[in-house]
Length: 212
Image 1 (spheres, rainbow, N blue to C red):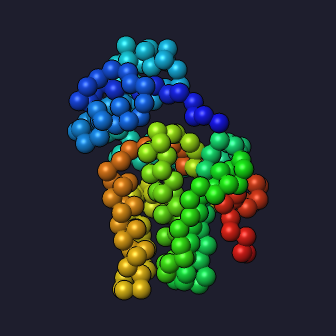
Image 2 (cartoon, rainbow, N blue to C red):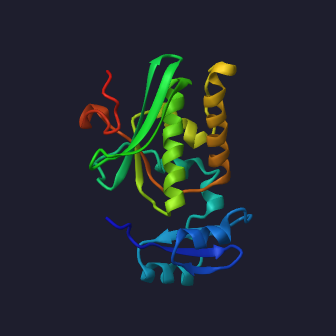
């Protein structure tokens, strides 16, 4: 299914106006101090928002530090959005050989996979979310992401993996990925919803490795 067309309003950036692709919007806002922008599902809404100005619309600057805004991204899912990505990790031991993956929630088709490498389950869950965010941003998509890890959600929210994993030669590969993920979160904004999968009500998340 082709992604839905979105329109991007830039109120403050290198150039302002309405852009048809995320790439055009990003070119005007990435690295621009105080950039203000937002996506809309229709051109009419984008025109109205641009005309009314950015005073009542969320901006990149507002999204970064505001805890209340971030919390909205991490609500528990009430219903399953089929047009979404589910992520999960598995680890044999703690630490142990870890791997993670992302799948299409509707079809179960694998979209990405990493591992195995020495790490922890929480690190795998964290990396999987950031991997999904990065992939979706490259494609200009605002697809919802599901995870069953509260810990990983908090790490994403804080842009910091609060792990006690020992750093040595055996864990260097995973530590390098963690640092890249933290850097990506610091340097990028996103409007994708990241939702907590309710395992008790919905069963195992679609990306589950089935090893429990």
